[in-house]
Image 1: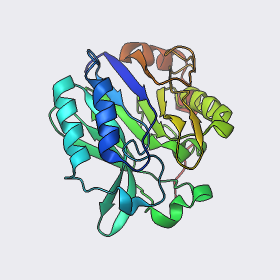
Image 2: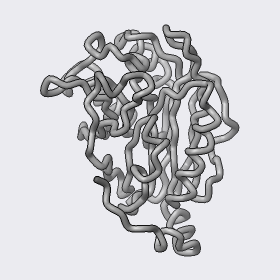
Image 3: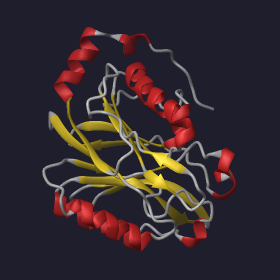
Length: 258
């Protein structure tokens, strides 16, 4: 168990449906990065939030997975973010998590964004998104999942909840509020990594990436729309002390997801 983890979330603009350009752009930022345990990238970080997956889809042996493995090894850090994957004849919005040893885990987005027609072109996932890294139990989620508290409810005693997103400006107040709420109600650290900039459809993304502690305090600094790294240290012992003192999770409701 590593008691303290340093998390770095890259709040970046994205080139539209241009995986190679996005990887090269992120390369420039990662070469300056040192001394972190986890590097997080936004939803669909190789393409932007495209509803034409055939233009950018890759396999789990494709160039982006190989790129992630290379950076995870070079940085000695886990690298995670969402990309478009084609598998068994279906397209998936997949949160891929790669460790320094090259181990690869993933979570497929459960709540596809019907307002943009994501449900028409991407297969919905049903896996729990729970992984273990350096003794921490981590729950992976993607963007629209944030609006559904039951799907993220801490029934498995995870320690860290992560959302990768392309969350637009008109609804950014909901993003801020719900990230904080997920931290408080689940007595967990929560990270939200959102892109910034504008896409080819004219949608503006204001960032507001943030890291919250289990009491709902933002520990990563002021919310910003700038291209920047968002970072903070999270502490397992401090988390357990909060949970021992404030035993709210012991009173959570039991339920089954259908």
